[in-house]
Image (tube, rainbow, N blue to C red):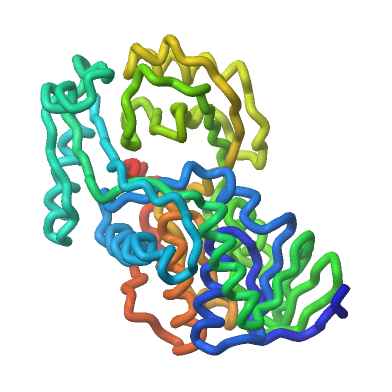
Length: 384
């Protein structure tokens, strides 16, 4: 066992995709005195339990730009890291039941096309022709992004971590951060279950625990963890492959192909925030109801397994990415509301620039934390 080192130039709290990507990008820039601290094992929480979605179809220009940058890396990931991440560009199909949702979709398509995102607008009849197993009688239409898809989130995160470790980054698993030392509004160090570390820079990429980590620095951010549940069927041949990621937006339901089976899931909008990742098998009945309504043939499918994960939600469902001005040396990238995996490669680069250069070429104004002072109590629309 290596001796505990009590100093570091930079400490990263959180060993999911954000932490691993940030460590990699810092090391790539030549910053080696970095320690990454993970309370459990790398990529075991939100990252490893996610469904690995990657899409360009967003309603906000900043999210689209994050996705465009990340996509370039995903498409060439194996060349750079020599790791097969199972990137399947099977597309994303968004479907809208409500008229106002459909109007939001069409507005988003205009923005997406302005940013050179390939996207198709499909009528219910066109959707039925391309995916005959779908029920479309109650939808307004859909949008399809052919460059969207999914990859293996664990392999992506571990590829970043392994490259970072090989270039000198220290990774401490099973190490919980219990406090952040702040003096005169400056970061001075952290306390952990293995011992203290003196450091002038702390990066909060703790995912669902991001709000708790911020409180250690005396900050209160509106980020809350919510359980999401995913179920996978046994081999199912009645739906031909490949199956795109199909989002029944107003039903909060999705499905996609996964090996020989079908992966399906949703969140319970009535469930309060918590760190609960247990599977509620009673909730499976609600998922099946949505599944059979949208793809009636799934009535024949049999469930193989299920698991729970966590979304980290903000009031506008967009993240906080910022060098926090109230506490010098404290950086955050939290609250991605289900978009963290796909944006991790880009955010790691952005954080490395903020820290090493003091600025970044990416416009972070949409992601500053004080925006919530403006939108509070307004009841913002759900982000797409």
